[in-house]
Length: 148
Image (cartoon, rainbow, N blue to C red; front, side):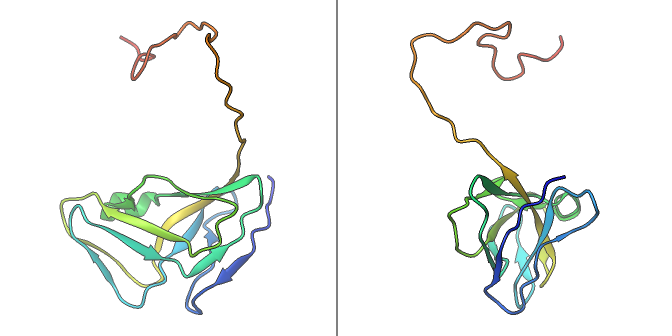
């Protein structure tokens, strides 16, 4: 297991630093830094502050994913499915939560709202070409590798 030091600045004294739920958890929980309950109508999206800014190391990105419990119990998950925090971003980390359910939902102050995975990435060098190599799959698209 590899560790990356990520300096974090509290923008609000009430902010909670990310925490890991278990020894081998890949994602650290992010907490809502809000003063009162935020209500979500079905289909509604709201930006929830964490009260934190961070300095993700060069060569890494912060990926914001849904928390399975919040998504399955309340229908709340990031609106953009996966948020990306680039290494050069220094603003407040916020989560655009969307109510995917058909009933109203809510977030309480200091509630866990998403999980953050710090991961290395590669930057591609895109090279235009006239020909691509052949594969068995070829141009088979959505669902083309499933069984019949």
